[in-house]
Length: 186
Image (cartoon, rainbow, N blue to C red; front, side, top):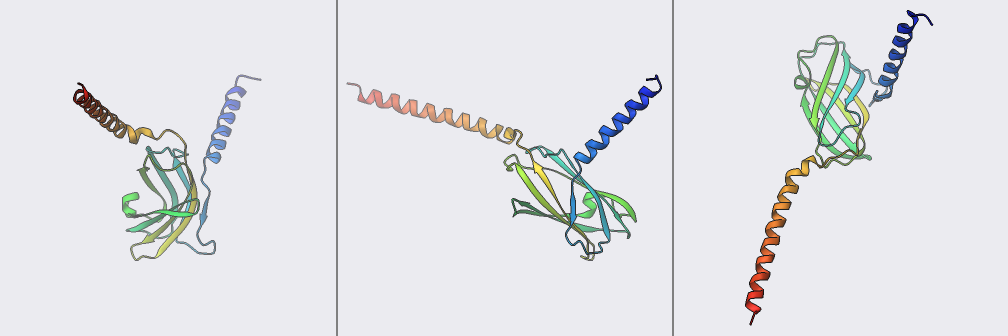
């Protein structure tokens, strides 16, 4: 192998690995109505980290394109866990992307910390995007996972409080027992 072919081979290998990683972490999206002609086309969803870590920041980035300028609107999000609807929230479009949205490509990005007590497992999310006149621009669904990683950070203060309370209770019991022993003494 020549010296000039080594960098080309290395570059090819690196690009192949990058492509495989991108495909492996891509999130499958589905339109709510496959026959609908939505004004906003969703190109993809990226979730970071994937899987989501409980009690840590998570970001959902939705790449989309629009054929009309958008001066505002809202996102309606519904989350299900094992088929059960568990959460809904509504966000102002301009709080999740720069407004006005020009014709062409744009990204909706939403970050939040999921509670540490969130059960691990597979979830599904439905997102509807409405314009300022409440006209549905798109509706998609996709799945995401919440990992089994440590989520005890939310309990640290609680554990400390329990430890202090337990110690106080233990001291009270000892005090009562000592007092009772003194009363029972001849």
